[in-house]
View 1 (tube, rainbow, N blue to C red):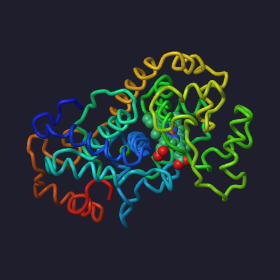
View 2 (cartoon, protein in one colour):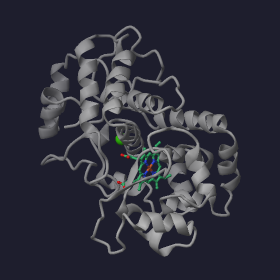
View 3 (cartoon, rainbow, N blue to C red):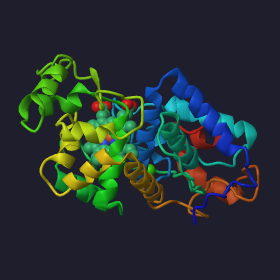
View 4 (spheres, helix red, strand yellow):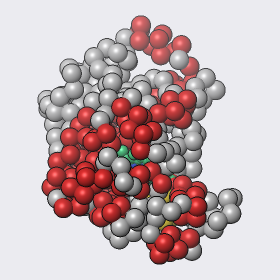
Length: 324
Ligand code: HEM
Ligand SMILES: [Ca+2]
């Protein structure tokens, strides 16, 4: 039901507005491109790509922001709000936050030198979130290959998609707490590289936990195939990264991306499109907007439904953009 032309008549300026807002955010801080891409991943793996990640905790709703994989780690919500504001300026009440995030993720990849693709849109925004889903569905950096593969399979994504999408770690940063055990206690790592990373990440848990290191030691603000070159050199920062090249069945796929960036880009794009298709809310599944109208007008029935959902709904409908 998602399609590339969903807003072609209701908001033809949407792609341009998102692109320029993302470009200016990434120009200001290149890491933001990585942070936005990750927001999309963490949204899609919990209830599908429905912007559930963007909802704040309220007295009646436990959101996803404080779940283990997100807490103190996901960032960029204010940029998503700024992008949404730019779109609202053009076409009030038309484009969902879930679609804003999907398009912004693509534009982030492009802004850092990666491939482009047509983003399918038409998603509705969720009115619920899942704290336990965020904890259970998003793989931790301690995952082995089997667990990574299983968690992607649970979302309808193949092992091949998992390896290609992990190439996202060619950009962005990780906290010491995410890679400490890998650089101190494990042997599937280049010793010089482990030594280098140890200098910014104290061995004692609780000290320097939030110190950052680049996921790709060479070019963390350029989207290319360097991530796979690092893996072959045993310079994956996370335990889960190195699992993709550690004598297992995914070694040949990693090798193939080292020799062909275009093969990586093609598989990455197809993985992103599949990830964007994870159980989308469409049609009347939730209250959001009539795609045929340029302005959202809740009917009285919709209002009473929204009222039952209490405080967050108040925020959602009346006060905020996406992240609230
Ligand atoms: C394969 C399983 C994956 C695991 C175990 C994993 C784990 C992680 C961890 C632990 C971090 C660092 C977080 C921190 O320390 O604050 C991270 C960062 C990141 N991840 Fe993943 N990830 C996976 C897949 C993906 C996928 C599929 C994408 C995108 C499609 C992605 C995009 C990113 C990006 C861009 C960053 C850097 C974010 C920033 O700098 O703000 N990851 N990931
Ligand atoms: Ca979601």
